[in-house]
Amino acid sequence: MQAGAEKFRLKSQWRETGYSPIGLVFDRIESTPQTFPFTTWKISADWMEKDTYIEVMTPKEMPKAVSLSISSKPIGERETETANQTIAMDPIKGAMFHHPNGSRRLTSVKVTAPSADGFPPSANYVARYGLAKFEVGGQWILDVTLDNGKQGISRDLRPALPLVIHY
Image 1 (cartoon, rainbow, N blue to C red):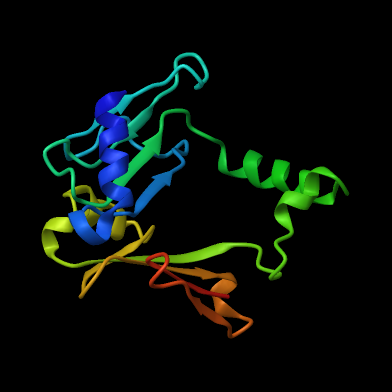
Image 2: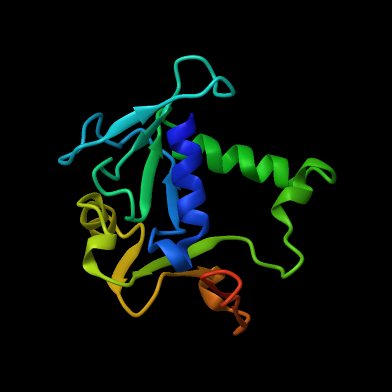
């Protein structure tokens, strides 16, 4: 727990430490392989459901790199979409799907790192499946697009956060 808390502290001070402030967590779906062509490690916590874990796809030896991980429990793609549509129709429970800016879906994610060593080997794997793009640039930036940017609005939250949002 102490090591995790220290790593979180270093990541929260990314401007001074160079650690990535960015982490992406993916849902495991039925077609996700049980093992990956790169090293992973698993963590669990008391607050998690029994027999579940987070599989970290960023090697421990790369503490400054962007954090990539995946949930342990597969979700059914069709079942989740149907369940979400049902919840969205409920006037109270469905409120979580109605963002004040009108956006509904995450459609693109790009992570920019100050150097190539900010990306673990798993970044190539994630990019190959079109789940996120990774590029080297001047600083850490998470660039997120919602609804394919159909409203034509962009918000740059730098320097407070390394985040640019298009919707």
